[in-house]
Length: 454
Image 1 (cartoon, rainbow, N blue to C red):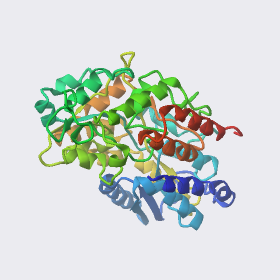
Image 2: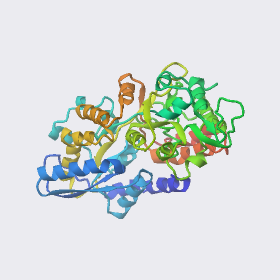
Image 3: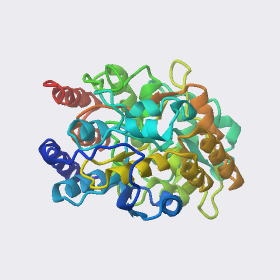
Image 4: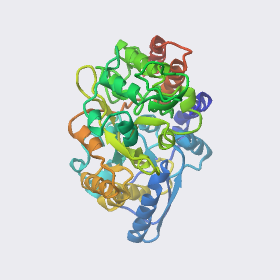
């Protein structure tokens, strides 16, 4: 998302407090009238077929009901949502992100779902630990029912490993540090190849003319404040946390020396020719496509994209753990999506019943069989792992990371869109060399000012 679009999004979200005055409260439980027509929004086209099947099954079980599914790209999703709220044509139910829901909830745009939990008999012990808790607001009410969970791992090109004299096993116990990058940087250097066939760890490597980068870069939104697939695994494993507390932190740590030194090292990979520049990564070809085209040997990416890396003809992909940090521990972000009901709906009962169905095994098993994401319901998540394996994709690394406690929960805070509006351009400026990493301390002060009157 470019800076102009991000600023537009932050400006658009500013109207939400005004909308809260006129928002329809909806009300009611999840077990009332289940007839009528509602609209449900997604942002991942890969998941749409599975949810279309869920909608068909739901309609069959609830005669007289219809669920219309609309899909929007991630970069435009929340801006489109804000525009639709202003225009009065918002959907009834949305796929929601943990970092964004507090601002929607606090401005009255979401209906509490505690009554659905009771009416549907939902037991959160049956879901991935840590995910249900993400969706409770500061007022103690629940605004989302768990949909799926995700975390990050390393994706590798097996042929490039072999060409470099490396093996998948050699990726299992790598470590990084902000001084010299450790064995992780050594591996990235070895896998980087310039246009003349010289590797990054060999004399004469031309960092200005690289044919294959050892590590790919994803430039999508979130790179400045969240960095889930870009820098979170380095900063979090370097004894850093996003804020003073999570959820609902108000004092962010983007000025912490541990964060700044992690970003400084990460940026150095670009300067050394081991990772593409931000401009190149933002040129219109996504990280998955660049990997499939042979431009990247490694990529750190989320479980929701894992299947894509295995779909490229002529590329044998594999999944390995993230590198360990200076203290010998790994740390990736554990996040999870949920489904929420907008308070503007004129079909609150049907909307809540649909959200209850989305959280059930009946739907999450359908999603599991599609082998795209990991459902939040544990029994369905196990089926998803089997479905991935049947498709020839071993996703156990993602599951192992969570089981080993090698994850930190996604940051949840009010004003998140405003946080993005500050941190995205600040990080972009650092990556393209216009600013030094120390400038992130100034951005951090601006972020903290967002919470000064809370």
